[in-house]
Length: 259
Image 1 (cartoon, helix red, strand yellow):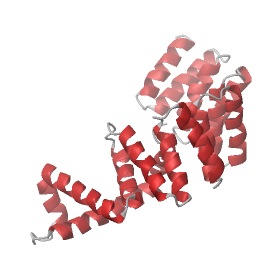
Image 2 (image 1 turned 60 degrees about the horizontal axis):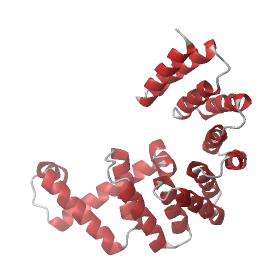
Image 3 (image 1 turned 60 degrees about the vertical axis):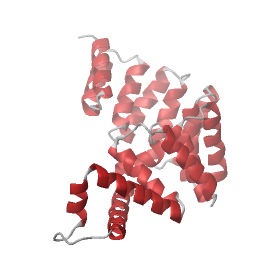
């Protein structure tokens, strides 16, 4: 088999979320032809998505050796460095990506994210705004703006960006995104809005699956009032939020969401 066939097989596995299998195919392509930067790039991405950041850096480094004019390679290198908490080095690579191409929202978002990690909120908000100026519908940058504004105690402005994030991803019904939106709803809405949100959620759940509600919230078939059900639901959601926030996937979604 040729290197191109292995490469195409690797992309097929990658697009099916089979990252280890894709890694194997990309490495076979590299064994046959070690002079194609794209092979290293995709292999680096497969490693990155397996949380093998140090290995992904080796791949991105090789990409840059073969093609130092591709900003995506520098941006990806920065992503891996950021995951290793090497913030200053990550900033250098994001900055280099922007020096090559200052019209890409993803590069501004990457730089904004690492500046947020450093609590450099003024510069972070500038980068996120640059990203949304290029693409107003880029949900990750809108979410980043919301987080920075929240840290600056600008709650109403923050809430506007969180609402926009929800609107932009209205068609995504993945379990993790649903949990994230509930996290936003509970943490950033006003008290009255939060109550409305929970009541609406409870009403929906009750209509869709009344038996499940009864099984979850009724103790020995004892009648429970709507207020008690609401409180029970609130507790269950807050528990899932804590679990979600502490999970690898939760941390991933909080900043790499839909990137």
